[in-house]
Length: 327
Image (tube, rainbow, N blue to C red; front, side, top):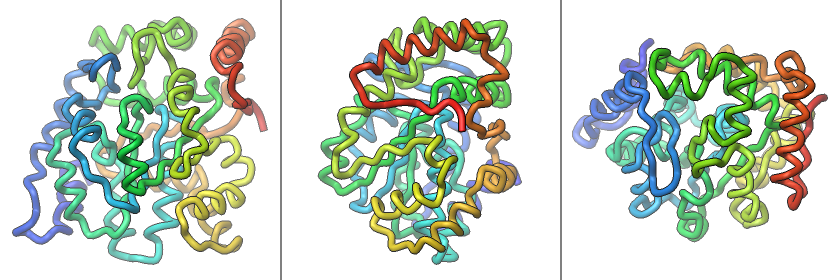
């Protein structure tokens, strides 16, 4: 099933007389993949699929629902995994919503992508509680409005070395034009080039200001870690003890869950099962690597690893964040 078929199938869950025209959304996705142009919102460089109009709309115009859930993250830190866990927690007992959200995994679930008409689609789909996503920096979001609206935000973090490997592999698997200047500048000629450019502020500055990197994205969210509507989730903790972490997420989302039910969700959302399930998601290339903790060891030289360590110490020394690099 291709992107058009899957997206239209989802839109068809809205009655015909209320259904918005989704073709502009499909056209926008196709255009963004075909034309690798990096856009900006204020001082922030957007991701490949980020659109300034959408960032501005989400910040100034969007009226969230009281029970909305937003999984926020930097790319390749566990966004899809956490959304899948939330999907089972919220929708599993409702066959209509659970079926609908099978196709709701691509760019159209992100606040900052495609066309404003997408927000109208969100309003009319037959779900009682929405699970959305964003890769935006905290400075790009109207957090005061979201908190006042009752929105729950889960922010995921992952050790930067494994994230580098996952990001590098994902970009190679995405259908971006290899000959574009932006692609060559971001990827370089090797994995080492890719990491070095990022550490020097020349790499993937998605939803960041000039010269920033992933660690700055974390720092933008860090002051909000104790907000009553924000929860930090660590990728490595999820890998180590998924049942325990799923129970924490359920409590945060005010979902009643027994230990046995949490273990069931953990089993259903294991990396292997999620990876297999995503093969059936229309229009989403396979961007899963190994999902392991410590896979970075087969890609990093000692010197490059130590350079990342120095950068982490330099930027995060004033925080209590301690990354786990092996399990």
